[in-house]
Length: 139
Image (tube, rainbow, N blue to C red; front, side, top):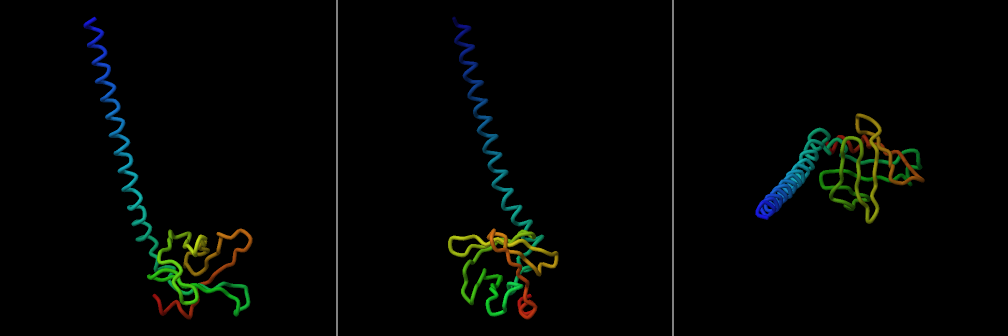
């Protein structure tokens, strides 16, 4: 009978130790993930600075009077002179920002960062080109 109590107590202690180690492992894993995300974002900002896409982007292959234009800059995204989003993401391959409730996502088409294609709308995917007349003023 005494042996069963000792075995039970020993078994409970082992279980508590196992659970504690599992919780410590999960906490360490969560900490690693929480630290990895900011490090990855820092890596992207150094490797692909947002200044690569600063400038006025003009829709191509449409009449000049109906071409959409937007400006990417340090203060955010502006359309027709008004800021529509103060934050946008750029990872070297995609530019993404919000306009109201919708997300606009563009795929960068070349290594010079001078052409992008709108890919967030499946029915219409225009190409935008960085306007040369505004490019030199911003960079």
